Amino acid sequence: AGKRTGRRNTVTTVSAYGGNAREPLEREGALRKAVRQGALEAWLQPVVSLASGQVTGAEALVRWPRTDGGITPPGEFIPLAEATGLIGDITAFMLERVTDWGARWHRRRHAPITLGVNLSGLDLQGDGVVPLVRRLLAEHRLPGQFLMLEITESRFMQDPHGARDMLEELRALGVRIAIDDFGTGYSSLSYLHRLPLDCLKIDRSFVHQASRVSGRRTLFGAIASLGRGLGLTTVAEGVENLADARLARDLGCDALQGYLVSPPLPAATFAERYLGDTPVAVPAITA
Ligand code: C2E
Ligand code: MG
Ligand code: MG
Ligand code: MG
Figure 1 (cartoon, protein in one colour):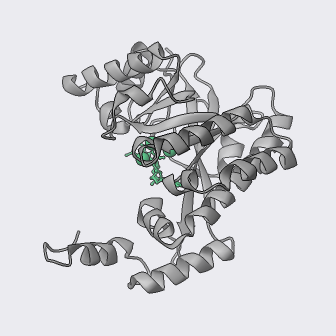
Figure 2 (cartoon, helix red, strand yellow; figure 1 turned 180 degrees about the vertical axis):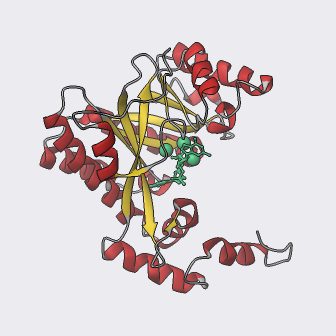
């Protein structure tokens, strides 16, 4: 974090981008180049059903490999991508990867797997996402129900009416919609039943260590029953231990995601581990 000076944002920005390129401009050029050259990667984190203990989906998370072999996490470049207009290209790239893989896996597997892609608020402001999703589903012959689009409350609330229309159009393609990081925004709850939603992803700040911290457990339970009461699928994010996983199950969540099962993985590793003939067992969550 930067020093508390009048130029705090600038200072913070520079240090937050870190990595190889120090200056924001240099950083922007590097990101632009990475996007153009297809150097970004879509990693996948498994989503596990609490009823069956099976991997029923995965969330795609963008990764920027560094020249030194490390990885720059999205928190360090998504804001830059949003500020520079590169986010649209990143969204398109992620949707392309996921519909391609999803279609391939869909044809090969008995049990269906749903793949999630995060949308930026800017994607909801432009008018390119609906035609893009329509084209990709058709090109890959992937039924829309195997694609989940994740939107945070705050992103959605920037333009609730416009966003709602777009979500309706996506829904008409069969695509599912999730509210991401639920509970961390500042918006009113009243939009929840007016939106075409399928899934509520409960933010990890309510989930992590909820089995030990009673205040968190109370909020976690309240959010889970809110979601269920509205007929939404609920996913507990950031589950790192078995006690929290069992709590999620006891609170009526449908699925979980978190380091307990796996961190995000390169797609090939994900497929090898979870979609092969001898899938890796997930921890005994249902026991
Ligand atoms: P998110 O969509 O809520 O994604 C979940 C984040 O939590 C991921 O961080 C994931 O690695 C992390 N996580 C998963 N399980 C655990 C756990 O058990 N413990 C902890 N501490 N963390 C866990 P990541 O990949 O760094 O992504 C951060 C955020 O960046 C995402 O939050 C999402 O808002 C954004 N993001 C990632 N990929 C994309 C993308 O392709 N497009 C857009 N627009 N945003 C993206
Ligand atoms: Mg997400
Ligand atoms: Mg989330
Ligand atoms: Mg998040």
